[in-house]
Amino acid sequence: YLGVPHALSVTSGTVALEIAIRLLDLNDGDEVIATPQTYKASVQPLLNYPVKVRFCDVEPNTLNLDPGHFASLITSRTKAVILVHYGGLPCDMDAIMPIARRHGITVIEDCAHALGADYRGRKPGALADIGCFSFHSSKNITTLGEGGMITLFD
Image (spheres, helix red, strand yellow):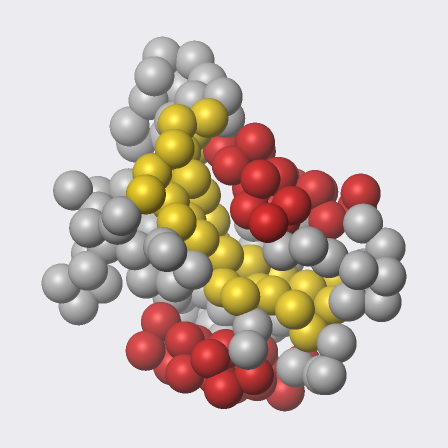
């Protein structure tokens, strides 16, 4: 459905984010850019690492990560960006991905609200490096309790 080569079921969306962040192999002094317009689980796992979290402004009309501000926050220590497709509306990935690629930044998609969304013929969770989904009972697709999924590319 998503068009990704790898998808793993996990116990929750939070666990999906924890695994994604662990895959970054973060070191002391690394930086991760994130959106403040999210649930705490999107950035809470970063507190277990000696990294600096830099919050990026959001676009006023979408509440998604602002690509222009994202570009201005990048330093030589930036390792990743965690973005949220807020309210099921995908971020401007055509603007974000070239910036990330140019700087060698891993892009993690928090897709907790985006299962079923569409971005120019592609699905969230297949737009970047790692996708994280939640199937909590408050989401649009649920396992009647907890549940999650992480998507990966080779």
